[in-house]
Length: 157
Image 1 (spheres, rainbow, N blue to C red):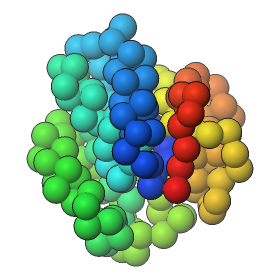
Image 2 (image 1 turned 135 degrees about the horizontal axis):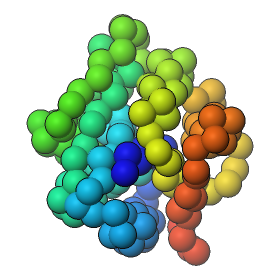
Image 3 (image 1 turned 180 degrees about the vertical axis):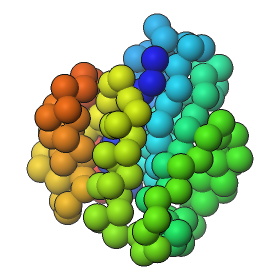
């Protein structure tokens, strides 16, 4: 099973913990025969990738742009580097700048390789092009199953 992730960044600690538990519950039925596809952004992407690895699965990373890491928050870099070092495959897109367009293209690349999408999503419209709502729409247009995770009481910054 190949599962892509898209989800919110800027998650408060309590929400991150709830989402981690929900993702692990969703993945448990597939582990360890699961490959997770992630861009490793802070928030949902890193939570998902860590859960896949902890459950014995593999992670493939899609890096949207050469300067992608530079745009991540300082507190997310250690986990980004750790997860990237454990990836079984890394796909680097040809973009230099980390923009909403490169992020959406990375999401499309993940969807091209995925059997389903886990969307850590509050159900609201995207705050900018390439946000989770856009990825959910793209997945549905491709006929990819979407599982939304947003536990009761979850919130985002």
